[in-house]
Image 1: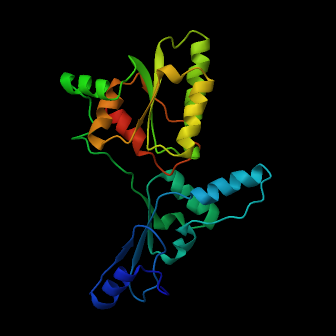
Image 2: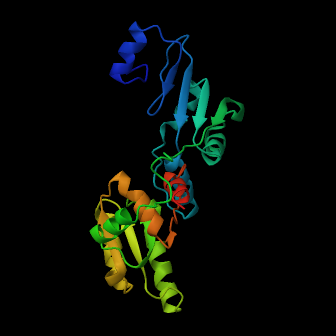
Image 3: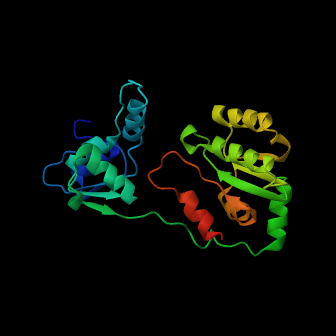
Length: 232
């Protein structure tokens, strides 16, 4: 624990002939003579705390493990935005940071051509003829309510007649609030909450959507955007 390593990793560090340690999450270790690479995905606690302070909220900060970035010899971030946040919040030397973007499996996420599979997906999830798609998880930072409110506003203006919404994600308290919002906006009849969706069904949902909606407040990197683009 003093080294900042999970127990199993500490055993390997003691007994294996390691040349480098890649920390994919948690606190990077202190091991004399061992180069450390650290991957940082986002600085969500720091970013949201900064925004809370701007609103006058004095709640305390629970910082991310990125505060230990000075222990690493090299740092990988999954986006330029996360790199810039590291430099801004913790004054990390940008010369020790490498941006390596995430990617998607193009053997799975591609335009769907299988008509029977598309029809089967439409029937299983009872999809509207036309729909906007949101892919969770259901978290407040994902801001799915903005998508529902935008769709309701478009329908009031006669610009999205017959268009519904499909929201993918495991049901939780936030998901139940979204259901209540859909009812209050008059969208309940045309809104589908799918619950959990197997990975192989996602390309079928992306491919049949009128548009993919992703109004997030913050993310280090969003795989859903890449998946949607890959599916056309």
